[in-house]
Image (cartoon, rainbow, N blue to C red):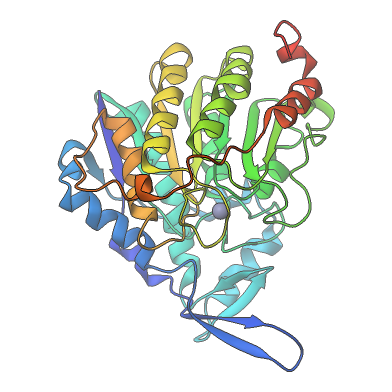
Length: 370
Ligand SMILES: [Zn+2]
């Protein structure tokens, strides 16, 4: 089985420069480097080269998505807004915490195109069953009508619609383990029973509203939207428990033909935009478990699409864990920096949260002991 890596140096060209914090009407502060900066993915790519894991993958370049791909999941007004903003020579805010840089529209098309490529290769390329789209800008906060939270267009949603249309997929699972709620993807598929959307997130981190257990989908989509809002401090053990107790039964009930992971590795223990504690090893184990589900239901097909991850020193290492999980590798590390931290005695209690989630989906969990 082969694993594809989709990547293009051009992703660096979307650069919003420095970010400012508005502390009050009178006081603005320059934060220095923007959280969502080009270094993030360049460092991931460099680490894959240095560990030589990249040599065990098959490299593909993305093509630009077409405007009609975007229009399947976004309104014309939204697409036009980003396109027009990106023609300017300065950065322009196009949504809440979403900034367009000069030329950002084309790079956003290349990002969505990378997500499409990740779908193509697992269906069309000989022996390729898994793909990792190392793309930016990210997408999961972009709603049907607006860019949001560093995201211009919803890459995962574009990929889902593409897989449905081109490869006839009737049931697609989107597992969003980015530490922030995948509000945009939820919004786009909230009425759609062909997409089971599952988001594991730190409760009320970002966005400040939503991501509640009670948001289970509407109309035909009722029962196809699972939110798992976790408390701060959750690490490898808690995330694995979520996969075992919630995700595995839900996936076995839904029987997806394709699994797509909205993979933000920003639940890592050094991330500046969250308070979780997942390590490289945790991400490796999570991928291994999802691969088992893909083997049962999807003929091994597993597509991973990059979302967040903001610790420049550790995000590449956490992402290495994801790639290791795909490749059955465990790169020998000189020092496990995670293990140097004295956090082992801290155990967040998530059982009551998981019991609430199970209660919200009686059709899936009624046979199981809550
Ligand atoms: Zn995130």
